[in-house]
Amino acid sequence: MRAQPLPDFVTADADLAGRTTLALPGRAAYLAEISSSRQLRQLAGSLPPRRFVLGGGSNVVLSGDFDGLLLHMAIAGRELVGEDAEAWYVRAGAGENWHRLVLWTLANGWPGLENLALIPGTVGAAPIQNIGAYGLEIADRFLSLEAFDMDRGTSLQLAHAACRFAYRDSVFKQQGWHLDARRVVTSVTFRLPKEWQALTAYADLAAELDRRQLSRPDARQVADAVIAVRRRKLPDPAMLPNAGSFFQNPVVSAEVGERLRRSCPDLPCYAQPDGRLKIAAGWLIEQSGWKGRNLGRVGMYERQALVLVNRGSALGTEVMALARAVQDAVRQRFAVELTPEPVIL
Ligand code: EPU
Image 1 (cartoon, rainbow, N blue to C red):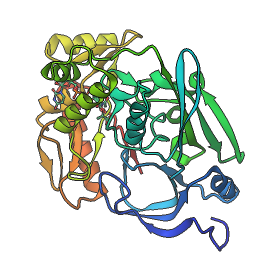
Image 2: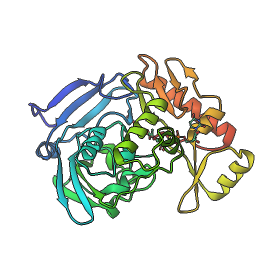
Image 3: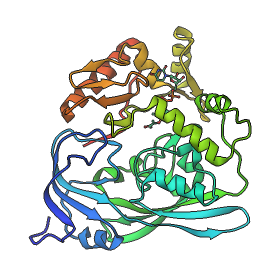
C-alpha cells in the first residue's frame, strides 16, 4: 500500500481469528473496515495487487496468512426504496447480515426471501455465488446491485442480465472480480413480487411442512420450516465451525449423467434447463465412505456429507488435505470432479 500513514480504517498485520466461519487461523497484511463507498474511493488509488473482499467469512478457506489487503464489508442499511402494483423493492447495504434481512422483510409483510432463511453470510456476498436453497435462488428475487469499480474509482449499477446468474455463479466469479476485489458490491436491491406463492416443492421442505400440517403455509411459516430443516441438517458455525456446503453439486453432461444413472439408480439428480444434470455431491461423498469421517482435526459432517467441519483448532492446510482426499475418493469411484464452493485464500 501507499506510504504511511494508513487511513484510520485500515489495520496492518491484522489477526483473522474469528473472521471466518471455519474458524481457521491467519493474518492479513492489511485489513480495511469498509462502512461506506467513500472509503473504497479513498483506497482506490493505492491498492496492493492482492486484495479480497470479506463478508461474513462463511465462504472462504484461509489456507494460511494473506499477503495483501482484505476489505471487510460493513456497509449498513435496509430500506423499502419503492413499491408499485406488482412488487416491493428493498435495498440493503452489502454488510447487512443476510438472515436478518430475510427476517426483517417478513416482519414488514414483504414475502419472497423466506426459502433463503438462515443462510450464513452478508447481503453483498449473496449475488456473487447466487446463493440458493429449497428451490429458490437470489437471482429469482434480484433487481440490481451497486458496485464500486476499484480500478476506475467509480460506482456502477448492474441489472439482472448483466449479473449473468447461474447455479452458484455470477459475472463476478466468471470475470474473477471477486478474487482481486476489482468490483466490490456495495448494495443490493431486491424485487419482491406482491403475487406471492409458497415454494414448497423441495423434498425436505415439503416433508417438514407436512409434519407441521401446513398445507397452505404463509411466508413466515415457510421460513420457520426452512430454519428447522437447516438446524437439523447443517451444523451451526458457532458450535461446529464450517462453511456450509464445501463442494458444489456437479453439473454434468447428459451423457455422463446417463452413465451414472445406469450404474447408480439411487443417485439424486436434477435436470437442468440446458439438458445437463445436476447431481448431489453429498450423496457421492457418502457413497465414497467419507460421511462422518475425519482426517486429523477436520471431517465431513455426519448429518450432511457435503459440509466440511473443523472439529478443533485445525489449520487451513488440514482443510485442504481433507478436501483433496474427498475429491480423490469421488473421482476414483465415480469419475466425477468435485469443485470447492468456498474461495481458497
Ligand atoms: N445426500 C446424501 N447424503 C448426504 C447429503 C445429501 O445422500 O450426506 C442426498 C440427499 O438425500 C438428497 C440430495 O443428496 O437426496 C440433496 O441433499 P440436500 O437436500 O441436503 O441438498 P444439497 O444438494 O446437498 C444444496 C445446497 C445447500 C442447500 C440445500 C437445500 C449446494 C452446494 N448446496 O445442498 O446449500 O441448503 O441444497 O436447498 O448447492 C450451501 O451452499 O452452503 C448450502 C448449504
